Amino acid sequence: MNPRNTLKLSDHAETTTVESVPLLDVGRGNQPLRQQFLAAFEQILDSGRFVGGPFCQQLEEKVACVSQAKYAVGCASGSDALLLALMAIDIQPGDRVICPSFTFFATASAIDRLGAVPVFADILPGTFNLDPEHVESLITPKTKAIIPVHLFGQCANMDAMMELSAKYGVQIIEDCAQSIGASWKGQGSGSIGDIGCFSFYPTKNLGGMGDGGMLTTNDPQLADRIRLLANHGMRPRYYHSEVGINSRLDSIQAAMLGIKMEHVESYSTRRQENAANYDSLFAASELDYMVTLPEKDPNCGHVWNQYTIRINHDSISRDVVRQQLGEKKIGSEIYYPVPLHQQECFKKLGYNTGDLPHTEAAAASVLSLPIFPELTLAEQRYTVQSLVTILQSASDSNRRAA
Ligand SMILES: *Cc1c(COP(=O)(O)O)cnc(C)c1O
Image 1 (cartoon, rainbow, N blue to C red):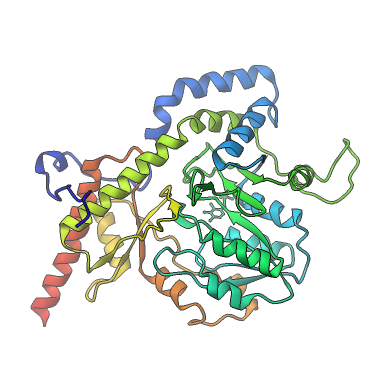
Image 2 (image 1 turned 90 degrees about the vertical axis):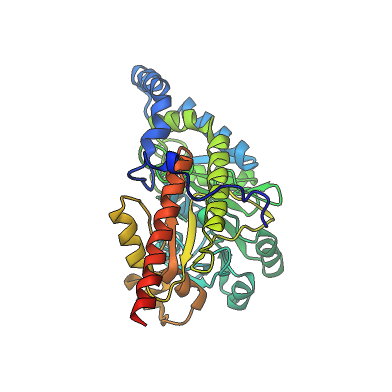
Protein backbone atom coordinates (compact mmCIF):
# COMPACT_ATOMS: atom_id res chain seq x y z
CA MET A 1 0.00 0.00 0.00
CA ASN A 2 1.17 3.48 -0.79
CA PRO A 3 2.31 5.05 2.50
CA ARG A 4 1.00 8.44 1.32
CA ASN A 5 -2.40 6.92 0.90
CA THR A 6 -3.82 8.43 4.04
CA LEU A 7 -6.61 10.62 2.66
CA LYS A 8 -10.18 9.48 3.06
CA LEU A 9 -12.54 10.05 0.22
CA SER A 10 -15.42 11.45 2.23
CA ASP A 11 -15.05 14.36 4.54
CA HIS A 12 -18.49 15.80 4.74
CA ALA A 13 -17.59 18.94 6.63
CA GLU A 14 -15.04 19.83 4.02
CA THR A 15 -16.92 19.14 0.79
CA THR A 16 -20.34 20.61 1.59
CA THR A 17 -19.04 24.06 0.79
CA VAL A 18 -17.77 23.11 -2.68
CA GLU A 19 -20.26 23.68 -5.46
CA SER A 20 -18.02 23.95 -8.47
CA VAL A 21 -14.40 23.34 -9.43
CA PRO A 22 -12.82 25.24 -12.29
CA LEU A 23 -10.29 23.48 -14.51
CA LEU A 24 -8.02 26.46 -14.03
CA ASP A 25 -8.56 29.65 -12.04
CA VAL A 26 -5.80 32.07 -13.05
CA GLY A 27 -7.30 34.73 -10.81
CA ARG A 28 -6.38 32.83 -7.66
CA GLY A 29 -2.72 32.82 -8.61
CA ASN A 30 -2.66 36.40 -9.85
CA GLN A 31 -4.68 38.10 -7.12
CA PRO A 32 -1.99 37.97 -4.37
CA LEU A 33 0.50 39.57 -6.80
CA ARG A 34 -1.81 42.31 -7.97
CA GLN A 35 0.05 45.22 -6.36
CA GLN A 36 3.37 44.00 -7.72
CA PHE A 37 1.88 43.68 -11.22
CA LEU A 38 0.47 47.20 -11.09
CA ALA A 39 3.74 48.68 -9.84
CA ALA A 40 5.71 46.96 -12.60
CA PHE A 41 3.19 48.13 -15.19
CA GLU A 42 3.55 51.72 -14.05
CA GLN A 43 7.30 51.43 -14.20
CA ILE A 44 7.14 50.28 -17.83
CA LEU A 45 4.54 52.88 -18.73
CA ASP A 46 6.81 55.59 -17.38
CA SER A 47 9.91 54.16 -19.05
CA GLY A 48 8.29 54.11 -22.49
CA ARG A 49 10.25 50.97 -23.34
CA PHE A 50 7.81 48.30 -24.43
CA VAL A 51 9.81 45.68 -26.31
CA GLY A 52 12.86 43.94 -24.89
CA GLY A 53 14.73 45.85 -22.19
CA PRO A 54 15.76 44.96 -18.66
CA PHE A 55 12.63 43.00 -17.71
CA CYS A 56 13.15 40.69 -20.70
CA GLN A 57 16.79 40.25 -19.87
CA GLN A 58 16.00 39.42 -16.26
CA LEU A 59 13.39 36.87 -17.28
CA GLU A 60 15.82 35.26 -19.70
CA GLU A 61 18.34 34.93 -16.89
CA LYS A 62 15.76 33.39 -14.57
CA VAL A 63 14.48 30.89 -17.14
CA ALA A 64 18.06 29.91 -18.02
CA CYS A 65 18.66 29.36 -14.33
CA VAL A 66 15.56 27.26 -13.63
CA SER A 67 16.16 25.12 -16.72
CA GLN A 68 19.92 24.87 -15.98
CA ALA A 69 20.77 26.10 -19.50
CA LYS A 70 23.51 28.62 -20.26
CA TYR A 71 21.44 30.88 -22.50
CA ALA A 72 17.79 31.87 -22.90
CA VAL A 73 16.19 34.05 -25.58
CA GLY A 74 12.68 35.46 -25.28
CA CYS A 75 10.18 35.31 -28.14
CA ALA A 76 6.48 35.87 -28.78
CA SER A 77 5.05 32.39 -28.07
CA GLY A 78 5.85 28.74 -27.55
CA SER A 79 4.85 28.10 -31.15
CA ASP A 80 7.36 30.67 -32.35
CA ALA A 81 10.01 29.14 -30.08
CA LEU A 82 9.59 25.82 -31.89
CA LEU A 83 9.70 27.52 -35.30
CA LEU A 84 12.79 29.54 -34.37
CA ALA A 85 14.50 26.43 -32.99
CA LEU A 86 14.00 24.56 -36.27
CA MET A 87 15.14 27.62 -38.26
CA ALA A 88 18.23 27.93 -36.06
CA ILE A 89 19.30 24.33 -36.74
CA ASP A 90 18.72 24.92 -40.47
CA ILE A 91 15.78 22.65 -41.14
CA GLN A 92 15.22 22.75 -44.90
CA PRO A 93 12.28 21.82 -47.14
CA GLY A 94 12.08 18.03 -47.45
CA ASP A 95 13.94 17.34 -44.22
CA ARG A 96 12.21 14.92 -41.86
CA VAL A 97 11.63 15.73 -38.21
CA ILE A 98 10.25 13.11 -35.82
CA CYS A 99 7.73 14.20 -33.17
CA PRO A 100 4.77 12.74 -31.30
CA SER A 101 1.27 12.83 -32.73
CA PHE A 102 -0.15 12.99 -29.20
CA THR A 103 0.73 16.63 -28.49
CA PHE A 104 -0.47 20.15 -29.13
CA PHE A 105 -0.60 21.12 -32.80
CA ALA A 106 2.29 23.62 -32.63
CA THR A 107 4.86 20.85 -32.19
CA ALA A 108 4.22 19.64 -35.74
CA SER A 109 3.06 22.85 -37.42
CA ALA A 110 6.50 24.39 -36.89
CA ILE A 111 7.98 21.53 -38.94
CA ASP A 112 5.39 21.82 -41.71
CA ARG A 113 5.72 25.59 -41.90
CA LEU A 114 9.36 25.21 -42.96
CA GLY A 115 8.43 22.78 -45.73
CA ALA A 116 9.89 19.91 -43.73
CA VAL A 117 7.98 16.69 -43.08
CA PRO A 118 6.61 15.80 -39.64
CA VAL A 119 7.12 12.10 -38.99
CA PHE A 120 4.87 10.96 -36.16
CA ALA A 121 6.10 8.42 -33.63
CA ASP A 122 3.89 6.58 -31.17
CA ILE A 123 3.92 7.10 -27.41
CA LEU A 124 4.43 4.85 -24.41
CA PRO A 125 0.96 4.31 -22.96
CA GLY A 126 2.07 4.86 -19.35
CA THR A 127 3.74 8.25 -19.62
CA PHE A 128 2.16 9.50 -22.89
CA ASN A 129 5.68 10.45 -24.04
CA LEU A 130 7.62 9.35 -27.14
CA ASP A 131 8.45 5.64 -27.48
CA PRO A 132 12.21 5.67 -28.21
CA GLU A 133 12.11 2.31 -30.03
CA HIS A 134 9.46 3.51 -32.41
CA VAL A 135 11.35 6.76 -32.91
CA GLU A 136 14.50 4.83 -33.84
CA SER A 137 12.60 2.69 -36.36
CA LEU A 138 11.53 5.88 -38.18
CA ILE A 139 14.99 7.40 -38.57
CA THR A 140 16.24 7.65 -42.17
CA PRO A 141 19.12 9.60 -43.77
CA LYS A 142 16.66 12.47 -44.28
CA THR A 143 15.88 12.73 -40.55
CA LYS A 144 17.43 15.91 -39.18
CA ALA A 145 15.86 16.29 -35.77
CA ILE A 146 13.60 14.80 -33.11
CA ILE A 147 11.21 16.88 -31.01
CA PRO A 148 10.49 15.09 -27.73
CA VAL A 149 7.55 16.76 -25.98
CA HIS A 150 7.62 16.69 -22.19
CA LEU A 151 3.89 16.17 -22.08
CA PHE A 152 1.79 17.16 -19.07
CA GLY A 153 4.94 18.25 -17.19
CA GLN A 154 6.91 14.98 -17.34
CA CYS A 155 10.10 14.56 -19.36
CA ALA A 156 10.33 12.16 -22.26
CA ASN A 157 13.12 9.58 -21.99
CA MET A 158 16.01 11.96 -22.61
CA ASP A 159 18.73 9.32 -22.18
CA ALA A 160 17.24 7.48 -25.14
CA MET A 161 16.83 10.71 -27.15
CA MET A 162 20.45 11.73 -26.59
CA GLU A 163 21.63 8.24 -27.57
CA LEU A 164 19.69 8.48 -30.82
CA SER A 165 21.15 11.94 -31.37
CA ALA A 166 24.70 10.61 -30.99
CA LYS A 167 24.09 7.44 -32.98
CA TYR A 168 22.40 9.05 -36.01
CA GLY A 169 23.63 12.64 -35.87
CA VAL A 170 20.16 14.12 -35.46
CA GLN A 171 19.46 17.18 -33.33
CA ILE A 172 17.12 17.27 -30.36
CA ILE A 173 14.63 20.10 -29.84
CA GLU A 174 12.83 19.75 -26.51
CA ASP A 175 9.23 20.96 -26.45
CA CYS A 176 9.15 22.26 -22.87
CA ALA A 177 5.88 24.20 -23.23
CA GLN A 178 4.39 22.16 -20.37
CA SER A 179 7.55 21.41 -18.41
CA ILE A 180 9.18 24.53 -16.97
CA GLY A 181 11.09 23.37 -13.88
CA ALA A 182 10.81 19.66 -14.74
CA SER A 183 13.92 17.50 -14.76
CA TRP A 184 15.33 14.27 -16.16
CA LYS A 185 17.74 12.58 -13.71
CA GLY A 186 18.22 15.96 -12.07
CA GLN A 187 18.94 17.81 -15.31
CA GLY A 188 16.52 20.62 -16.14
CA SER A 189 14.20 20.23 -19.11
CA GLY A 190 15.39 22.55 -21.86
CA SER A 191 19.08 22.06 -21.09
CA ILE A 192 19.52 18.47 -22.29
CA GLY A 193 18.92 18.61 -26.04
CA ASP A 194 20.23 21.24 -28.48
CA ILE A 195 17.41 23.72 -27.81
CA GLY A 196 14.49 23.90 -25.35
CA CYS A 197 11.24 25.67 -26.27
CA PHE A 198 9.04 27.20 -23.57
CA SER A 199 5.58 28.77 -23.62
CA PHE A 200 4.07 31.31 -21.25
CA TYR A 201 0.51 30.87 -22.49
CA PRO A 202 -1.82 31.39 -19.50
CA THR A 203 -2.55 27.65 -19.02
CA LYS A 204 1.13 26.74 -18.66
CA ASN A 205 2.88 26.35 -15.32
CA LEU A 206 4.39 29.82 -15.73
CA GLY A 207 1.47 31.56 -17.38
CA GLY A 208 1.53 35.18 -18.52
CA MET A 209 -1.23 37.65 -19.32
CA GLY A 210 -1.13 36.86 -22.98
CA ASP A 211 1.33 35.11 -25.25
CA GLY A 212 5.04 34.70 -24.67
CA GLY A 213 7.78 32.15 -25.20
CA MET A 214 11.45 31.43 -24.72
CA LEU A 215 14.25 29.26 -26.09
CA THR A 216 17.10 27.81 -24.07
CA THR A 217 20.42 26.36 -25.20
CA ASN A 218 23.94 25.70 -23.96
CA ASP A 219 25.44 26.65 -27.34
CA PRO A 220 26.45 30.33 -27.60
CA GLN A 221 26.34 30.27 -31.41
CA LEU A 222 22.81 28.84 -31.45
CA ALA A 223 21.72 31.41 -28.85
CA ASP A 224 23.11 34.21 -31.00
CA ARG A 225 21.48 32.84 -34.15
CA ILE A 226 18.10 32.48 -32.41
CA ARG A 227 18.30 36.11 -31.27
CA LEU A 228 19.09 37.20 -34.81
CA LEU A 229 16.30 35.12 -36.39
CA ALA A 230 13.74 36.38 -33.87
CA ASN A 231 14.51 39.93 -34.96
CA HIS A 232 14.21 39.75 -38.76
CA GLY A 233 17.75 38.47 -39.21
CA MET A 234 18.65 42.13 -38.73
CA ARG A 235 22.08 43.19 -37.46
CA PRO A 236 22.96 46.01 -37.40
CA ARG A 237 19.68 47.88 -37.75
CA TYR A 238 18.23 47.67 -41.28
CA TYR A 239 20.92 45.29 -42.50
CA HIS A 240 19.54 41.77 -42.99
CA SER A 241 21.95 38.88 -43.36
CA GLU A 242 19.08 36.39 -43.65
CA VAL A 243 15.29 36.26 -43.52
CA GLY A 244 14.14 35.95 -39.93
CA ILE A 245 10.81 36.68 -38.31
CA ASN A 246 9.47 39.22 -35.84
CA SER A 247 9.03 37.31 -32.61
CA ARG A 248 9.91 39.33 -29.55
CA LEU A 249 8.83 39.30 -25.93
CA ASP A 250 7.00 42.42 -24.68
CA SER A 251 8.44 44.23 -21.70
CA ILE A 252 5.05 44.17 -19.95
CA GLN A 253 4.72 40.43 -20.43
CA ALA A 254 8.28 39.84 -19.25
CA ALA A 255 7.73 41.99 -16.15
CA MET A 256 4.54 40.15 -15.19
CA LEU A 257 6.21 36.78 -15.79
CA GLY A 258 9.25 37.87 -13.80
CA ILE A 259 7.02 38.47 -10.78
CA LYS A 260 5.39 35.03 -11.12
CA MET A 261 8.76 33.41 -11.81
CA GLU A 262 9.71 34.01 -8.16
CA HIS A 263 6.99 31.52 -7.24
CA VAL A 264 7.48 28.92 -9.96
CA GLU A 265 9.02 26.36 -7.62
CA SER A 266 6.20 26.65 -5.10
CA TYR A 267 3.68 26.37 -7.96
CA SER A 268 5.34 23.10 -8.96
CA THR A 269 5.34 21.87 -5.37
CA ARG A 270 1.65 22.63 -5.03
CA ARG A 271 0.91 20.79 -8.28
CA GLN A 272 2.93 17.79 -7.02
CA GLU A 273 0.96 17.81 -3.77
CA ASN A 274 -2.30 17.96 -5.69
CA ALA A 275 -1.22 15.01 -7.86
CA ALA A 276 -0.36 12.99 -4.73
CA ASN A 277 -3.76 13.92 -3.24
CA TYR A 278 -5.56 12.66 -6.34
CA ASP A 279 -3.52 9.45 -6.25
CA SER A 280 -4.58 8.72 -2.69
CA LEU A 281 -8.19 9.88 -3.12
CA PHE A 282 -8.58 7.59 -6.13
CA ALA A 283 -6.92 4.74 -4.24
CA ALA A 284 -9.35 5.29 -1.35
CA SER A 285 -12.27 5.23 -3.77
CA GLU A 286 -11.52 1.61 -4.74
CA LEU A 287 -12.39 2.63 -8.27
CA ASP A 288 -8.90 2.05 -9.61
CA TYR A 289 -9.99 -0.46 -12.19
CA MET A 290 -12.32 2.02 -13.90
CA VAL A 291 -9.79 4.82 -14.13
CA THR A 292 -6.12 4.55 -14.93
CA LEU A 293 -4.06 7.02 -12.97
CA PRO A 294 -1.12 8.86 -14.57
CA GLU A 295 2.17 6.99 -14.40
CA LYS A 296 5.17 8.75 -12.92
CA ASP A 297 8.60 8.00 -14.38
CA PRO A 298 11.01 7.76 -11.39
CA ASN A 299 13.74 9.42 -13.52
CA CYS A 300 11.69 12.57 -13.83
CA GLY A 301 10.97 15.55 -11.65
CA HIS A 302 7.35 15.92 -12.77
CA VAL A 303 5.76 19.39 -12.63
CA TRP A 304 2.19 18.26 -13.39
CA ASN A 305 0.95 20.78 -15.92
CA GLN A 306 -1.92 18.29 -16.21
CA TYR A 307 -3.20 15.39 -14.15
CA THR A 308 -4.49 13.11 -16.87
CA ILE A 309 -6.43 9.96 -16.14
CA ARG A 310 -7.92 7.43 -18.51
CA ILE A 311 -11.53 6.35 -18.29
CA ASN A 312 -11.85 2.60 -18.93
CA HIS A 313 -15.47 1.75 -18.39
CA ASP A 314 -17.74 -0.67 -20.21
CA SER A 315 -20.97 1.22 -19.77
CA ILE A 316 -20.08 4.92 -19.94
CA SER A 317 -17.85 6.70 -22.42
CA ARG A 318 -15.18 9.20 -21.55
CA ASP A 319 -17.15 11.96 -23.29
CA VAL A 320 -20.29 11.28 -21.26
CA VAL A 321 -18.23 11.22 -18.05
CA ARG A 322 -16.85 14.61 -18.97
CA GLN A 323 -20.32 15.95 -19.75
CA GLN A 324 -21.66 14.72 -16.41
CA LEU A 325 -18.72 16.28 -14.57
CA GLY A 326 -19.64 19.50 -16.37
CA GLU A 327 -23.22 19.20 -15.08
CA LYS A 328 -21.73 19.05 -11.58
CA LYS A 329 -19.78 22.20 -12.46
CA ILE A 330 -16.43 20.45 -12.48
CA GLY A 331 -14.04 21.55 -15.19
CA SER A 332 -12.07 18.98 -17.16
CA GLU A 333 -10.46 18.87 -20.58
CA ILE A 334 -9.38 16.39 -23.21
CA TYR A 335 -5.74 16.90 -24.11
CA TYR A 336 -5.86 15.90 -26.96
CA PRO A 337 -8.98 14.51 -28.66
CA VAL A 338 -7.63 14.25 -32.23
CA PRO A 339 -4.06 13.00 -32.76
CA LEU A 340 -2.05 15.09 -35.20
CA HIS A 341 -1.67 12.27 -37.75
CA GLN A 342 -5.45 12.29 -38.03
CA GLN A 343 -5.83 16.05 -38.50
CA GLU A 344 -7.32 17.25 -41.74
CA CYS A 345 -4.36 19.49 -42.55
CA PHE A 346 -1.97 16.52 -42.32
CA LYS A 347 -3.98 14.21 -44.60
CA LYS A 348 -1.29 14.91 -47.19
CA LEU A 349 1.15 12.93 -45.03
CA GLY A 350 -0.79 9.75 -45.78
CA TYR A 351 -1.40 8.31 -42.31
CA ASN A 352 -4.25 5.90 -41.63
CA THR A 353 -6.26 5.12 -38.54
CA GLY A 354 -4.44 2.35 -36.70
CA ASP A 355 -0.97 3.60 -37.62
CA LEU A 356 -0.23 4.83 -34.08
CA PRO A 357 -2.30 2.58 -31.82
CA HIS A 358 -1.12 3.91 -28.44
CA THR A 359 -1.67 7.48 -29.56
CA GLU A 360 -5.15 6.74 -30.83
CA ALA A 361 -6.08 4.81 -27.67
CA ALA A 362 -4.87 7.70 -25.50
CA ALA A 363 -6.85 10.27 -27.49
CA ALA A 364 -9.98 8.17 -26.97
CA SER A 365 -9.62 7.70 -23.21
CA VAL A 366 -7.78 10.62 -21.58
CA LEU A 367 -9.35 13.19 -19.29
CA SER A 368 -7.42 15.95 -17.50
CA LEU A 369 -8.67 17.08 -14.10
CA PRO A 370 -8.12 20.41 -12.30
CA ILE A 371 -4.63 20.55 -10.76
CA PHE A 372 -3.69 24.25 -10.64
CA PRO A 373 -1.58 25.28 -7.60
CA GLU A 374 -4.33 26.99 -5.62
CA LEU A 375 -6.81 24.09 -5.95
CA THR A 376 -8.03 23.04 -2.49
CA LEU A 377 -8.21 19.56 -1.02
CA ALA A 378 -11.98 20.00 -0.62
CA GLU A 379 -12.25 20.71 -4.35
CA GLN A 380 -10.18 17.63 -5.14
CA ARG A 381 -12.36 15.51 -2.87
CA TYR A 382 -15.49 16.85 -4.54
CA THR A 383 -14.02 16.12 -7.97
CA VAL A 384 -13.08 12.54 -7.12
CA GLN A 385 -16.35 11.89 -5.27
CA SER A 386 -18.32 13.17 -8.24
CA LEU A 387 -16.34 11.01 -10.64
CA VAL A 388 -16.90 7.99 -8.40
CA THR A 389 -20.65 8.68 -8.31
CA ILE A 390 -20.80 9.02 -12.09
CA LEU A 391 -18.89 5.80 -12.74
CA GLN A 392 -20.68 3.79 -10.05
CA SER A 393 -24.14 4.78 -11.21
CA ALA A 394 -23.15 3.83 -14.76
CA SER A 395 -22.07 0.40 -13.44
CA ASP A 396 -25.26 0.02 -11.42
CA SER A 397 -27.59 0.83 -14.30
CA ASN A 398 -25.58 -1.51 -16.50
CA ARG A 399 -26.05 -4.29 -13.94
CA ARG A 400 -29.80 -3.63 -13.72
CA ALA A 401 -30.08 -3.78 -17.49
CA ALA A 402 -28.21 -7.09 -17.66
C1 LIG B 1 1.17 25.34 -25.47
C2 LIG B 1 2.02 24.43 -26.26
C3 LIG B 1 2.75 24.88 -27.37
C4 LIG B 1 2.57 26.25 -27.96
O1 LIG B 1 2.76 27.30 -27.11
P1 LIG B 1 2.05 28.72 -27.41
O2 LIG B 1 2.74 29.65 -26.48
O3 LIG B 1 0.61 28.55 -27.11
O4 LIG B 1 2.29 29.05 -28.83
C5 LIG B 1 3.60 24.00 -27.99
N1 LIG B 1 3.72 22.72 -27.58
C6 LIG B 1 3.04 22.25 -26.52
C7 LIG B 1 3.24 20.82 -26.10
C8 LIG B 1 2.15 23.08 -25.83
O5 LIG B 1 1.46 22.60 -24.80
